[in-house]
Length: 116
Length: 113
Image: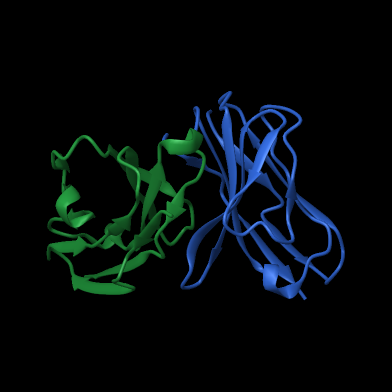
């Protein structure tokens, strides 16, 4: 069964610090997709990235970067030079491709607080 | 504007009083899904639908029903709500299936007393 673990429940940093949010996943499927979503204090869920299991290249988007390592079943998310606006709950999620690609499993989330 | 809408946004009800939370998307998406969010538990999938008249259970389906009679609508029905169903509910849709980016509604905060 698919499972996502975000061991860090809460992280607090000071503005301009770099911060990494960890995501470890479990799956028996060889084809799967991983996601990160952001939930700011306003409550909506915002898509950040999707990565398939065959693409282990790291991704960078502005101050955000993602490190996908199949060897350790991890898909970590780093924010460089954090800002107060980065304060949010961040969710990692996994969907397996087998069986019709039906279910999406989320981790419990990491609450990031960036202090000025 | 492409969006997923949910109604109501807030609801306080009593145990046992049937309620329906509506969800509608205007993106012609095939896949729709319901999640509940509880403190410390993250988002958990309740039900999903791959297409019209095709629905299936997620990880926490007990106490909920859904229907997909039209492509754009995916209502969540609580036949006999109980206090343990007090939660924040999100509807989502995606182009084809769970491998695609999910577009989420704004959420419905439900309190059952």
